Length: 168
Image (cartoon, rainbow, N blue to C red; front, side, top):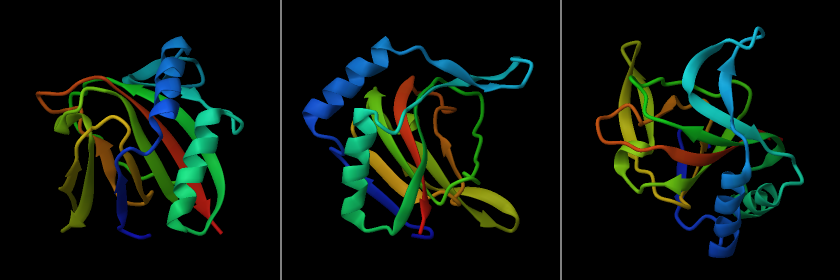
């Protein structure tokens, strides 16, 4: 899976996506980046942790199994709400092997998607740019540097589902 990115449009059935989009509107999102004193230090990401029994997780797992990725377990799943940023924040997901990111609700535009980077002379260089499209799933190696592209001029708020897996 290293350096591989799988892109699947129409990740969920239309009925499941409709249920998820209704679910998003009833939930209370909490700022993701707070410290132990509950002080907010990054205001652009909000999340709702999902229970393993949540209907969206069951559907997501079923869809990921199509790719025979030798996955051992699901480590965590979240709905995320993110807004326009001032700058890119490339990162890797240290605590998982595979990320399954599903775009759930937002405006279908390139600059609300995800950018992927490679290292060149100790510098991160954006080399893949995948646009936001509702119901598009991205499955990728969590150690690939990636970021939301919502730092560009033309962008929009987006809802995604992020799922973190580990290998056998």
